[in-house]
Image (cartoon, rainbow, N blue to C red; front, side):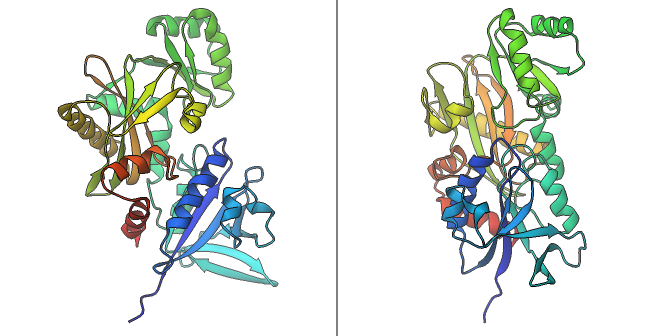
Length: 350
């Protein structure tokens, strides 16, 4: 008996500052999808225009960021007709329908990881691999995510949100309540763009200006003493968790450059902490995952203080997904290969 292949659309690119990272993550996933079980459609989102393009060329062109110049690209449009539950495109003067069994958004940051694309796919009636609309939007909002987690009794850094209309006096007062050093962050920018560590008052105006370049709301946040630990969580009802990792910094903080170059930092998998503390970190990560309504996969980041306290930092609902990224690295240390992870995610919806 021949089993019909499921059709999965892999979305990549996007109108985000993390466009290039999305290309690398998507390329790795595309190369790992089992072609015997799944028919794959590659949907690239142009960075400048936001157009959705069906890409039929060599996936290597995605990795090299040469995909959208390819003559195989065809504009596609989401159909909100749930009898179609897929895409429409024009070819040879005819409108064609392409139903989808599932969609895999590999879109980091704004306009992809924040619930926007997930919302479109939900209206289309297409199952999404990964977090849904609410959890994606909630995890992207650093302020709201912290409020939900703190309400459950999990420690979070002291913080104050600042709006574009806030006065300079209000900003300085907020900073004095938190104390230095502190972090200034955009509330909904994703990754580490626009984040500045401020050690003294004179550095505050520049940091605030930089954060406002990325979002209309920013957050002043206490600098928690200690180091960052992370957990890769996989699953819906039954959850699998990878080995805990640890970020060792020699200077500064784990900003965007450090994430992808590790110039002055290193990542230890498993983390260099006791077995008892490891289990506590994992338990906290699973609680956070459930509290924020995550599904499919996410990376939960926390801080571990010198006193053994665990503080929530953030959840990445579409973390980096190359063979060298933290998320697959933690699962690999727990016995899952990259191909195993991708197949498990597809099988959840298939």
